[in-house]
Every structure is written in structure tokens, then in C-alpha cells.
Image (cartoon, rainbow, N blue to C red; front, side, top):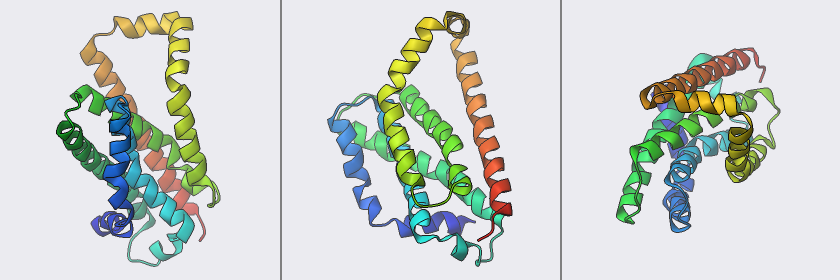
Length: 201
């Protein structure tokens, strides 16, 4: 299964040359560090899915000596490995450019990535290939643009929920959020595995 994770890096060796410049764009635009960590985390996993979507490599993957469960596991575990690596490189880049950031920024960016991945990864196995990556990238950009406005609107109008969240202590809030993200990611993993095992290539 480790070889499947490594395969994504090998196939993307040309795209990886654009990783640092891609991150530098967000740093130079002085975007919030959490957003920079988020887009850095998305780069490799979604490029891997985009490649497989174009090359229809699922037929090849299923001819290899790996079970379908292992193929899905490599996607979900690989996404975590790439996220950690991306956060490390992004932290170093931010430090070299003397941009301030906190561990909270990294945690928020990573959490948002895992949530976005949890909702989007199963779509690659549910929908027909062709336009999934494009739709997801556009959806991500739209959410990035209007997300803060929607969050502010909901916070102002759903005061009962807002007051409840504000009343929670910081450790409880962080722990609860982390647990929710883990549950969503695990559920997504299970859904993708179930769909992929029944899929005919």
C-alpha cells in the first residue's frame, strides 16, 4: 500500500515543481495563513485524483496485486501524509518570508482540508469521470470566496447556536471539532470503500 502512496508522487513529479510557486502566490497576496495551509494540503491529493480521472487508471490499479480496500486506504492515508508534508513545507516557506502564523492556523487549514476531502473524495467514485475535478475546484474557490460571508450571516442570525459555541471552553471546542472531523473523514473512507468494492471497471 505504501507503493500506491509513493506512486502519486512519482506521477506528479512535474506538477510538484509548481508546488512552492503555487504557495508563494498566496503568501505574496498576504492571504490568511490558514487558507495557505488549506490550499497547500489540497495540491497533491487532488492532483492525484485529477490524473486518475483523465488516465482512467482504475483499470490498471485493479490489475495490480492490491485489494480495492487497500487502494482506497492508500488514497485516504496518502492524503493525510501529503497534508502533513505540505503543512511542513508551507511553515518553512512562511518562516523564510518572515510571515507570522500559529499552530492554530495550521490546525484550521488542516481541519478544513480533511472536511473538504471527506465530502469530495467519494464523488470520484460516485460520479462519472470527466468533470469531477473541475467542478470540485470551482466549488472550492466559490466556498473560499463566499464562505466567510455565509459564516458571518449564520453567526448573526442563528444566535442560539452562536451563544452555545461561545459558551464552550477552548479545549472542549477544539476537541469536539477534531472529533467531528475524524468521524466525517472515517465515514467518508467507509463510503468510498463500499462504493469502490461494488464498482465495475
